[in-house]
Amino acid sequence: MHSADSREADGDWLHIDAEGGLLLLCIQSQFDVAAARICEEIVTKRRFDSRRLFSLAIEHRIAPQIYRTFTRLGLGTFLDSHSFRALELIDAANTRRNLRILSCGAEILDALENNGGMAVLVKGPALEAYVYGELGRRVFKDIDFLTRRKDAGLVDTVLRDLGFSQGRLDEVAGTVIPASREEIVRQMLNTHEAFEYVKAGETLERALFVDVNFEALWKGVGTYASQHTIDTEVFLDNSFKFTSPAGRITVLKPEFQAIQLAAHLFSEAVFFQFSGRWARDLNDVSLLRFTDIYTLIKRIGLDWPALASLCNEHDAKGAVGYAFYYVERLFPGTVPTDFSEWLEPDGSRWIERYMDDAAVERRWKLPFEERIFAHLARAAEVAGHPAESGLGERT
Image (cartoon, rainbow, N blue to C red; front, side):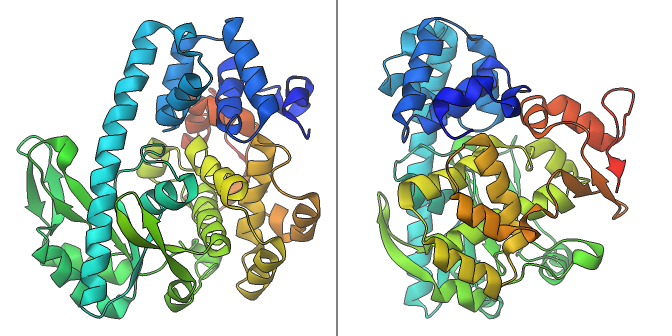
């Protein structure tokens, strides 16, 4: 399966319905003329359910991308009017909010740098500004920073001077409920990040959230608890200044961006499936996660020999192999064959496997394509309801 034209006949797509397939083609259409042509054919011949497409776009957090694809290809009139109008409003609101978040991120970076600190924007804001290169195209909520743990005090001072405090947003009252000293200390001691910083706004939409990360990669559990650790200094040394729509920001170089995205996806997909948040956010099957890596490869490009060298140096072949395998499965022809082959066997170690909450390795029964577009069946499998879908087999 190496081209958009061959997909419908390919066995890997047997578990993808018309709407799921159309989502994938919409994402690819920005870089693939054949994908754009098939999109137009499917939509103009009305071979899809408009409302299910809308539902999947919301679920996978790619509504702005779908709206912009339909608009760019002149296909908006083929969606039902309510869905198209909703997508239009979501896109406009997301663009406004993202500009505010990115502007705040740039302001925080400047303040830290002016006071002798250093930080790198990661995840949502960095991906939108650098990888996607288009304001409002990616959905995100938080400003995520990576910085040195020794600079935690400086970061705290800077953020409080800018009106942030550590706590939780009371969405009804529109105020911040302060975190206790015990909660703040426990978070610092037991995780890779500080307790979340929040700044209330005049409306819920205008509230701002900052996650301060002291490590870029999440760890596993049990015997895998120390895997995929790269010193924060290495990431900071491999960052650069980039001019965003909201000002100058600092982001990771492409190959380090790839490792961070892959390791984050890998850790949450394989080791955190017992978490309530994992079940809620669909972290292992959110199309947004795979689209981030796909867009990085297609729009920015990777130095594949350099990435291979980094994978060897930092023992990242397993994480990169896992993430890139599924990116290639969703978006054929994205990952060079020789690189995929080089990743073996480390890259396939956890394909279709995960660790349950008892640190027991299990194999998925549901095919990946069914898990990603039928999340209720996937949730039932993780929850252990074999009557509904079948608990993953022990390996």
